[in-house]
Length: 132
Image 1 (tube, rainbow, N blue to C red):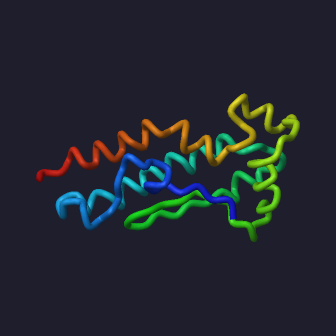
Image 2: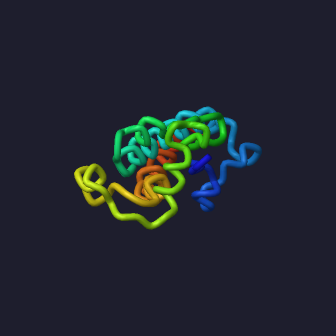
C-alpha cells in the first residue's frame, strides 16, 4: 500500500500524545484530523498522474481519533501503477500533462508537504476554539 500518514510523523512539532493534551482539546483532534485528511485527499487526486482515471478513484482516506492516512490500497486496480507513478521516473503522458504541471510523481507526498501550512492552521484553529 502506498500510504501517507497525517500524524505527528509528518509534523514532528505537533504532538498528538493524547495523554499530554488537556481534556478540553481532545475532542477537537478527530475533526481536525479529518479536515486535514480531506485536504490531502483532494490534493492527491489533483496531483495524480492521469491515464484512465483509475488511479484518481483508487486514492482513499481514513481518519480516526488520533491519526489519518491518504493511500492507494495495493490490492486496488491501480495499486502497482500507483507505486510506480509515485516513486519511479517516467515521461508524463498527454492525460497527465493536460492536468497541469502539478500532476505527476510524488503526488501523495506533495499533497502533504504543499499543504503543511493549511494543515497546521486547521489544528491551530481547532485548538483556538477551545476554552481552557
